[in-house]
Amino acid sequence: MKVWQKYSQYLLSGEWHIHTDYTDGKGSVADYCRRAAELGIPLVAFTEHIRRNPGYDFQAYLEDIDRAREQYDLFILSGCEAKVLPDGTLDVEDNVLEQVDYPIFAFHSFPQDIDVYLDAFYHVLKNPRINTWAHPGIFLKRAGLHLQEGELCLIFKALSNSEVLIELNKRYNAPPDAWIDLARGQQVNFVRGSDCHCVEDLG
Image 1 (cartoon, rainbow, N blue to C red):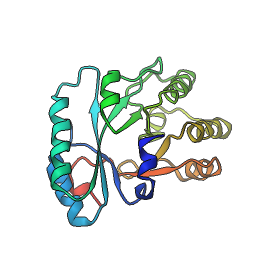
Image 2: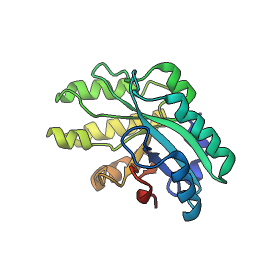
Image 3: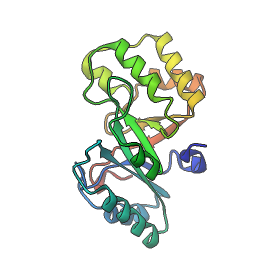
Image 4: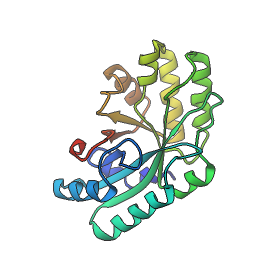
């Protein structure tokens, strides 16, 4: 069972994509939790950027989340946003994926080759720890790459079969409406991910 399934009633009312001042966000774990409690947001998932060499104290990040769970009447999930590599692996150590509740994946810097992209995408879905595809389609748009409707349907069917969510990303207004319609036809589940980089992004 994926972690999101335990909290499925909060997929669209929670906030499932948050970056703190451990990386490129502004605000601490406690700052976000305090604001979420004020706004009545029932669940927050922290999805800090991660690499095999994080560049920050990942254990301290997890400890901040543990402290917040003791202080706030919220569901608080630890997570990470892992970058997809060209071979379909993730730029994160396996033990990190095992420590967090809610790992998500994203395409950032990547070869501008649709076949490499698709191969990597399907490989990622084999990872049982992955919960969500973050800001779907943004890399393709920036790279000038395009997926045909048939390719999209196969992607969405694979997501559904793998029980991986599609993020409704407020920051980038992704995915496009046409993708959402196709994904619904394949019984894919959606999750709210505002991609918060400051406390004011909540809500």
